[in-house]
Length: 434
Image (cartoon, rainbow, N blue to C red; front, side):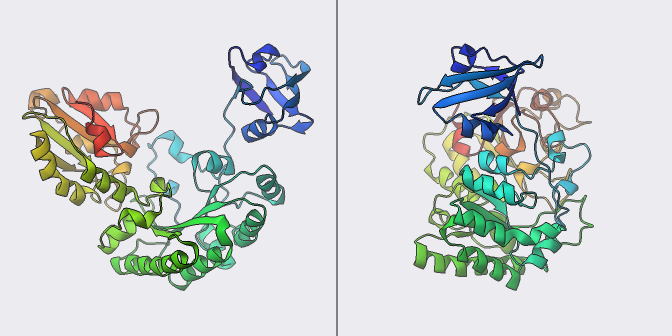
């Protein structure tokens, strides 16, 4: 059942007398299991809605819904399905105990995959679940495949159901459900010939597999005792080469690249970042595929930057992005008439193996800016000058404006005193407001 969180004013739901806190039990005789069911079943024009009031009163409401008009029920969020795997590379096991609370949730929920693009393993989806995905057209899904050989995948995920992945993907493909697939590459586990097999198997499923992203495993100082290790530059280069072979075939046969190496693979291998055409316009930046190229191309297109007139522009980043921002700094300095400083932050929170900007803790950033604990009042120590702008990595904050170490943005800003704090996925958006 789905509980009603809000009723839109003037909506059909309000007209039926539905109350906040009511439960939607059935629609047209079909049980409402979650919010996807609710959306799917409310699409009919003639509706018979069974509800249960907060006091336990059961009611039947019959209504003809106008096409294109919202029914007016805002449901409470679904309870998240949690992961049943024990992946050898699980990043959640690499979180400190004081990380944001949401980071301890091991979600593996196809509803979140469909709605938000999070990756799922499908190990907790049985035959009925697969039938539902097909029946309701829940597509596309984002699937963490990692390996298609049953024994290899079972070993990676530490789950005997993991070996069913190809059967599951075939059923989804036959039913018209598309997927974006990913492989988290673990040297000695699913690279080399295993990666080749995975690429071949997924390609063989046809056009229902929209894309395949290959990303390197990430480890923090809290899970370095795992049986996996980080890739060497040579191993990252070999993975890129294997992806390139798959891309050549895909371009010949389907007209686009299909298989994509993550930005971090190029950084580990010490290779140049591909041009924008490599990524075929797929929105895979959240998975670390194409975000760096998007950033660089945005910088190249920037025009008419705000004049800061003797102020200071401080660009906060991690080790991976620092060289690219240093390359941008002279152009920014000339264009804005400001002193531009690239602040490369050492990730003490997760450890030196974590180099991406989005996983920087707020306290590590403050320390690098000269405003950490023990630095005193930042305005008194002179860390802030006239017209100082601090640009944060966009992904370093969540929707509630908290850093990954749970530091609130407002506390961060208070520590910086007079500095103006901005953020943006791209420099153009961060610097747009003068």
